[in-house]
Amino acid sequence: MKTIVVSLLKGGVGKTFLATHLAWYLAEQGGNRIAFLDLDPQGSSTRRLASERTGWFAADLFDPEARLELTDAPGITVFAADPRLQMVKAAGDVRDFLGRFPALGAHFDHIVIDTGPKWDELTLSAMAVADAVIAPVQVAEDSIECAKMLLTALKKAEGARGGRKVDFLGLLPSMVNPFDRREMDNAVKLARAVGEKLMFPAFIKARPTYKHSAEQHHPVWRETGSGAKAAADEIRPILAEIVRRMDVRHLSAA
Image 1 (tube, one colour):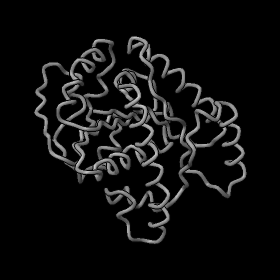
Image 2 (cartoon, one colour):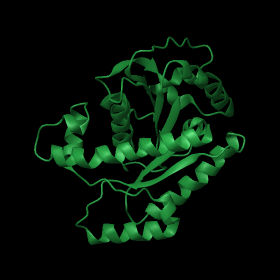
Image 3 (tube, helix red, strand yellow):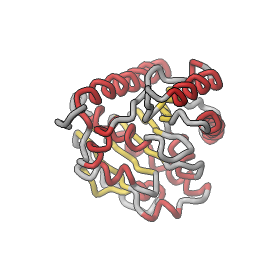
């Protein structure tokens, strides 16, 4: 089982888009069994994945008394967000999650976790079980500060893991307008501030097609409207590279 977390301590940067498309992409690779954990109380991923296998709840992983009736079926199994996630606020809740999470290993090949826009026990829990973390980021004026906050959070998560390193795959510029000079200048500033090694070697353009596919509860490569092919040709190689990097580093750590 390999676990990838999509996280940045800021809202509106494309976390849900990337996390759901990563799950869809993984599910198409040879009958993989994917667990999708929505640890954002806002539940955007839960709504976007409404057409997938549902009926499980992420909050149950924080409740040692809850029954976990898991499936081995291929495809995506959604552990949905519900109001109980807002009650996860104590170190004991994190410990309960860390105790229950390994049970997923016998039933799923990959775990994709979407997180909320702030540092809390939910985000800490996700980082504490991550094999890899990818961070979509807007190239705005505050993007450098957001990146620094995430890197600080990764260090805190490593403390909860007994010092075991979190494999950070990089900052992935998201919803970028390549014709906006200010955005491109901000992208250069971000790369210089954090270092080239921490930047993912690609970016996701701002495209209306991405919003349309979200409204239809399916990946952009199933769209048939104008711009769908260009969007699919852009995002699929990015997802493939994320998976490749995760697989290579997972094998190296084994």
